Length: 282
Ligand SMILES: Nc1nc2c(c(=O)[nH]1)N(C=O)[C@@H](CNc1ccc(C(=O)N[C@@H](CCC(=O)O)C(=O)O)cc1)CN2
Ligand SMILES: Nc1ncnc2c1ncn2[C@@H]1O[C@H](COP(=O)(O)OP(=O)(O)OP(=O)(O)O)[C@@H](O)[C@H]1O
Image (cartoon, rainbow, N blue to C red; front, side, top):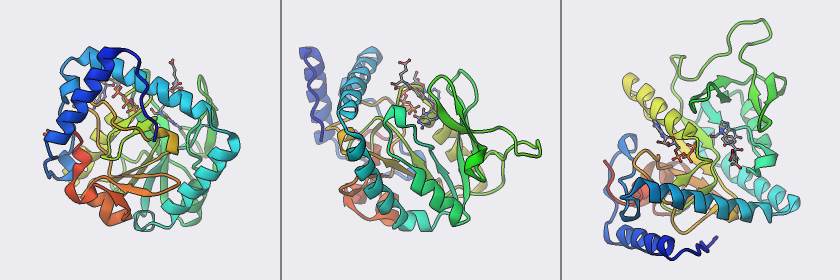
């Protein structure tokens, strides 16, 4: 687990307050559809939390840069094996799965995407929609449908099928979505997640939950894949940050909510529903 080496004293004090607040306030057991984070003690001042987030992002990016290609491949293989062996994967006829970007040093999802296609799951992958951090998830029917999109070279699905008709959008079809496999930069064991700062996934999950709730469906299970170097003591959060149900690393499955524990087992605080993180779930 990566330990923060935050030099500035103010940052360290804020992190300590944050940890103390988390220790003193046991998480409230709330249903997954409403799980979200209350601002922790360190998060009273939005600017400070943004600064804390930036600092953690830099720390984790540095740790990721130190990983060798072989190390990333070995961890990715173990992580994929855990996900593919899980009930969460088997029980998901419809799944959203990210397409990993090697340049961003993300856990490789090639084997997972291939297994989903081979297993005839209805598979959806992300395509950024606009400069306002909106993305949608389009049906993927084969590797040839992906194209590398600037500026980061992330492979995204072409907006139309070969015959020119629009590719199906997971939130525009009348089908449930059971599983979301998501990337991120940093995670902690209670299910707090830090992304790359766009708010893309937070916004999408909010929309996906509303989509499910409006139709009386269960919300999708949120599973993140992480290198060991991406696990930190505590991720600083704000109210809009979505708590996830489980994290899969090369060493273990960490269940962060009752739903995560039921679908993936593993260690962690799943029984207590602590995906709500710092306790003030609203
Ligand atoms: N594989 C993958 N696909 C994804 C995401 C992702 O994180 N991973 N996204 C999830 O949101 C969306 C794309 N958003 C992204 C946001 C920032 C960066 C990025 O490279 N940021 C640089 C910093 C850039 C800067 O500072 O200007 C970085 O993180 O180093 C990449 C993708 C949709 N698709
Ligand atoms: N549900 C939402 N609705 C509107 N804005 C949001 C939502 N979630 C996040 N944002 C905004 O997105 C910006 C980035 O948020 P944050 O730093 O938490 O992103 P992140 O979790 O790192 O990114 P991502 O979700 O893409 O992985 C913030 O300005 C935040 O206010």
